[in-house]
Amino acid sequence: MSSDSPIITASAHSVPSYLNADNLGPWGIYLQQVDRVTPYLGSLARWVETLKRPKRALVVDVPIEMDDGTIAHFEGYRVQHNTSRGPGKGGVRFHQDVTLSEVMALSAWMSIKNAAVNVPYGGAKGGIRVDPRKLSRAELERVTRRYTSEINIIIGPNKDIPAPDVNTNEQVMAWMMDTYSMNEGSTSTGVVTGKPISLGGSLGRREATGRGVFVVGAEAARNLGLEIKGARIVVQGFGNVGSVAAKLFHEAGAKVIAVQDHKTALFDPAGLDVPALIEHVAHNGTIDGFRAETISAEQFWQTESEILIPAALEGQITAANAPHIKTRMVIEGANGPTTPEADDILRERNILVAPDVIANAGGVTVSYFEWVQDFSSFFWTEEEINQRLVRIMQEAFRSIWQVAQENKVTLRTAAFIIACTRILQAREMRGLYP
Ligand SMILES: NC(=O)c1ccc[n+]([C@@H]2O[C@H](COP(=O)([O-])OP(=O)(O)OC[C@H]3O[C@@H](n4cnc5c(N)ncnc54)[C@H](O)[C@@H]3O)[C@@H](O)[C@H]2O)c1
Picture (cartoon, rainbow, N blue to C red):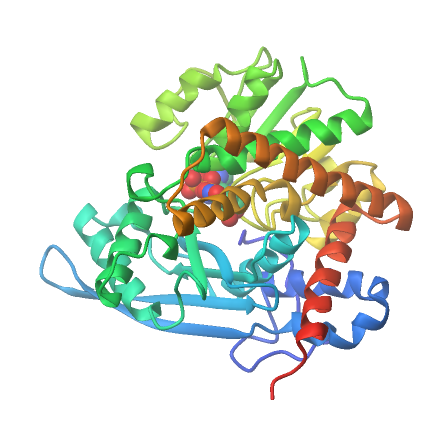
């Protein structure tokens, strides 16, 4: 969460005692988004409180022995926001600033996202408060394995299926799968997605989120009558999501003119050499040091573009920078990058926002394919996967666009209308137990 994010308090909501009611953090943003959709839920609004609290939140201590012999403790979380439509599904984030509020919000956005693209999952998310850059590989493995053991009681191929998120990758997923399998006594590939191909991973998964960002960007551009060829693209975050999205826009003839990561921001009005930048990041872990003009964060947000892709962390587009953003559309690669105040400002300024819950749903869609392939032990070609991904993303985006037009609401509210209706219909049909 960026330090200039607004403080959202609990006034209008009943808040669990384990959150700070004076500063709800990302969970407060999510609650505001639910409030905006409630008037459109008809009789299902009776169930809306279901969405305003997680079904289950597990906080765990993760102790490990460091390489120097000392013992370090890290705080870990796994939150299952809703499982009305199927098992929990959502990534695991390793970051020093992760909080329970953040993981709760991310788990809720997963419920919405999975329902918006209609994959048969509920929403979940996990995280550890750790800076993995400060750990050796062996320490990272021990943190991952101990965390997996601690959350073992609530995850499983039919219960809750983790995946990669910020600072976690295929290797971390391989360790999680192995740890779960050792505890269960049999190899269980379907417990996580985003695995290496050799361990039941799916072709196309690594690029899936960035590819989805590109597909949604292209659809939105078509609706606005904007040419991708020659369009100027600005990308915040050059990790898995940002770099793949940048590469696909670059390949489609767009110019990626500015990129920012945790270290610096780069600008090239003629368009950055995206493949070379990806190579650079693979060797250096950052865009810093690449041959291009460096710009300040302020200049970065004011760079004129046709498409702006936030693909780093949440709370990046705020009431402070939204008035100065000069773009036609924002395609949210990251989860929760735009605060509700910023959303309003962008709307007033006629800047289209394709919300995270659809724009970055490509990852979970191919995770769903991976899970299905693992169950049947029958693997599809990359072409089949990409075709199915594009079809699902296009169909989901088109329905959201239509609902937005019909109700004269933003794409975010439209996505929430579709998703919350699906979740609450499932809730109502299943009924309360006992
Ligand atoms: N990986 C996926 O499949 C996936 C799926 C859906 C959503 N997301 C979301 O996309 C976002 C990025 O995820 P990722 O997997 O690409 O992570 P990543 O760890 O691969 O990359 C994160 C990038 O953000 C940059 N960054 C970090 N802090 C920053 C800051 N303060 N300012 C500017 N840049 C900063 C990092 O330098 C890095 O380039 C997250 O919000 C994540 O939840 C990821």
